[in-house]
Length: 451
Image 1 (cartoon, rainbow, N blue to C red):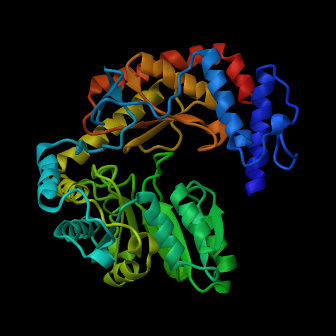
Image 2: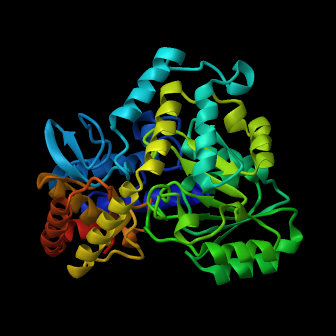
């Protein structure tokens, strides 16, 4: 796999060099010995992966396209943001319910600092817990409709650690092909047999289980409640039938679903009227709707107790920072007592989706909950579109290769309850005006993209 990635990186380097009129002769490629000038492979600048970064930087200089990633923001993330002192409409924030800023949530974080400080300084197992941790986990269990919950310091690390610990080489993992990287990495860590099935294809999952389940000790089915790249949802009731039939656990990653699905924002179980206790493992993040940082798992008391004593990402990590835990707890409370926020988000998501489709834009599979992609088709044109939109006062960060397939490069619009109808109308009008111009004039970037 590592060699395949290296080869793919070198092919991209060669393609971009050709577009720039440069030589594609070997220059210190892996296995070719020392590079000219005495450079060696332990010099990271000689790697083809690093060469891609340098060449794309050069392409940006030639085309006057700025780097759309790691932009420096001056203030709070919400439906607007400030970049270089300029306020722009922001469609690249996960603050789905506008909870990153209300005074009572900020006050909860400040009170926690006054009482507990900014750090608990060690793992909860070795240094003990604080009441803010227990309050947060009780709130997360209520939100999820489960017996218990446990909070980790990293959302990505939650999936890696929990899957990596619960499953092993004698086990089977069946997952959706577009599942989040954290699940993929956790599955790799476990050493389990991994089968990726076509997106939202229950028949393919059934076939994978039917042909393989009997040979493995345990089986895990993993899906997202709301897919963060496509904005669509799985058939939860169908998945529950499937896991029962094949004696498998079902894990649902609710990172993007919390706040966005269900009439109060409690996720896909509420959206599809399913008993949440029918799902063995609920996973979620604190960094999106809940306006904090970290991840969590919710489920039965036995599952949570097992994780609490065996999951390396919990046992060997420091406990959540007290103000972060307190802010997340307060966010859950506000979300549950103010369901109008979830309703406003859904209205805005559907409005953006409807307007985009009316303009003939490719929104893929999105249901208009909170994530709405506009699929452009290749990475350079997508980056150019993001740059044009920023010039017009809209921050929309692109998703490009290798995060998605090259012909699926897209802008991902993250809609919030705070967006105004005027912001939604204006950004889609801007996309509809700029995209045809880019497609008609970007022969250079199309060459780079292999079109």
